[in-house]
Length: 271
Image (tube, rainbow, N blue to C red; front, top):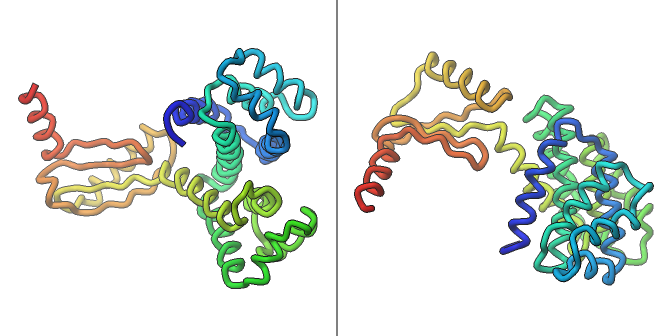
């Protein structure tokens, strides 16, 4: 996804983030359901991504399609999406799919004390893909166009006995609505989203020399206070930094290394 679609997706992610601490699996299932409605009609997809159509008109069309059938939150998320600009109808569907899967990841995160819940979700999805990859018969059965969604769901659930409710929502979506992919390929895409959520709970710390236990404790306390959650710290030594530390939490970089300060100085002198 690139250009205007990438910008619209970034805005949608930011808007969704405020809802995630209170998100439920039912919200994710509703969003997946809305995706099914969009994917079932090329005309609807074109109407909702037509750049000449007013945003209010697109939002109104969403209300006509799903109003009263889903929660107010699900309808609002979909309305906000279609009010943005998209390069292609496929990009709109991909964005909605990502938001639904992100809601699932957030429920695992909320119920499982952050990283623990995400790790459990990851393990279930990996287990599913490993079993499927080991059997051509399973691959054919899960991709069989004549098989009913119910039959595929029943088979998929047998593959991962004891899987969490969050994992089952994603697996069911993958086997019943893979959107042109193999089910295992869509599960792999969901795994990438889970990994992105996991990174938010891990601080990758690089320092010029080993940190003492006292320094690590102070750093842990400071980072937990800054991000408002209990982070896992992975500390490593990187002599190339010369001095200071470099910390990465998700996509955010906190850099106090000498190398970083020298780079900043060079940029200022070059102006």
